[in-house]
Every structure is written in C-alpha cells, then in structure tokens.
Amino acid sequence: MREVEVERFVAATPDALRRLLTPAALVEYEGSFVARGTRPDGDATVVTVAGGGLEFDLRVTETPDGWRYEQVGQQGPFDAMETAVTLEPANEGSRVRAVSRVSLGLPIPLVDRVAGWKRRGELRRLLDAVAEDA
Image 1 (tube, rainbow, N blue to C red):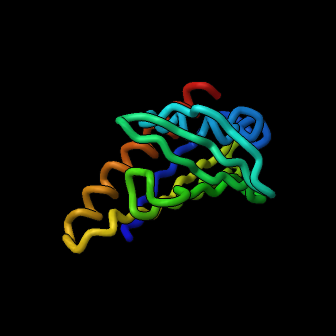
Image 2: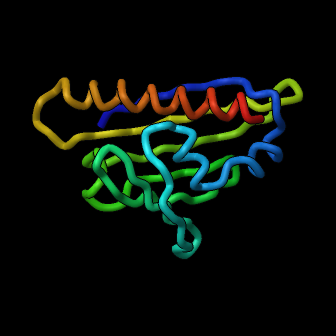
Image 3: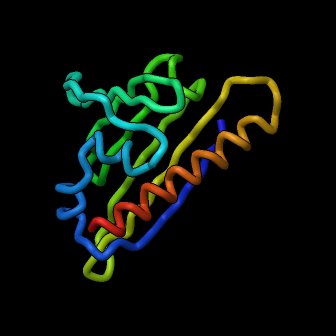
C-alpha cells in the first residue's frame, strides 16, 4: 500500500467544519466521484458514489477528531483504499489533515506509486474546496 498525506490551515473552527462536512460532501469535495446516495450502516454511513464508469460504496465513520472512510468491496478503482481526515484547532481556525492509503493490488511496483499520486491530487482538491467553502 502507498500512503499519502496533505495538510492545510482552514479559517473555520472544527465545529463549523463538522457541520459542513457530511459523508457525501467529503467524497464530492475530492472531485472524482458524485455521491448517488447514503444509507446508515451501524455506526457508519455508506455513501454510494459514481464516476468514470464506476459505481461503488465508501463506508464513512465519524471519529473523535474527524472521519475515516474506506472503499467497500472490489468494485472501486482501488484494490484497497482507506482515508482519515482529522481536524485540530489552530489559530482561530483548524489544521485539516488527510491521510490515505491506497493499493491497486498489482505486482508491478510503480503502480501503487501512481495510485498514490492520483489520491494525493484528490486530497488536495478536498482541502482546497473545504477551505473555499468554509
């Protein structure tokens, strides 16, 4: 698996960001997929997403400091993908950090590096959009 991380200051408090960032909004802010629907699943929310000829589910769980989400099953673009988005109070705003681990599950070493590069771009779009809307 390849791990990528992005971090950004956002001029909104963690409480304000929690109100803004629903499970569907997290996915849509990344810019690659559109949320088609959500459904509860125990302590999580499953978001069905579509784009680029794919449709798959992401399981989103709220954590004490943000959210954690992961691709469910093998229908998505990755063999495995998990992401944590955390919020930390900072200078009358928030330090937002997104860390994702991705794997395409192929025996070619550079493939996971490319998947990580794509994922980093999605996480940057996520934080840019959050900062703009906050």
